[in-house]
Length: 183
Image (cartoon, rainbow, N blue to C red; front, top):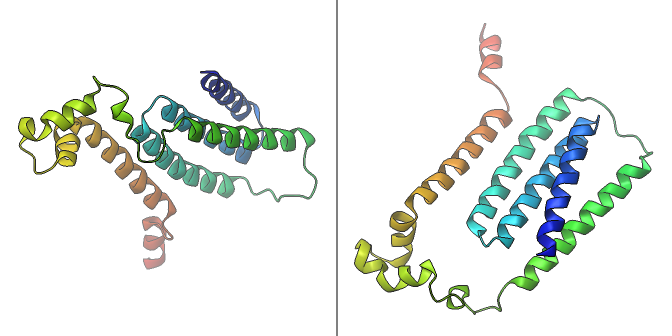
């Protein structure tokens, strides 16, 4: 539980830095750290599907924000760095490394299913009654399309929207430029 509170503190510190910093690229990096911390929290809350969705959305969001930041902020990177920024960067990287190691320590042994630990879990119902209740061809289809259909629809909508947004923003030539070159 201590790591959960450490992640909450990490997210709050990253949010504070993102709001208070003057450099847009630093703010975008802190926003990415917030999203990564959120996905680690979802892993600790045993929601890996939401954690994966969070990571995908975060990556596309960071691509969009970094492109917008670089297009707006045309500063060059010089050789000298601020001491505080370097320390904060090292602390963030070490915190993420330690959090990742702690997540892997909490995972069950390879080959040991997690749902066996909880007798009344929904997964037990899915396995015992899934095919009979839904009439699906296999257990995976019954879970994804019947028991968790709204969840699957929401995740697919989020992923589709992220990909569509990244494609629109990152395409090489916009329609506006094409119309200008035709005229």
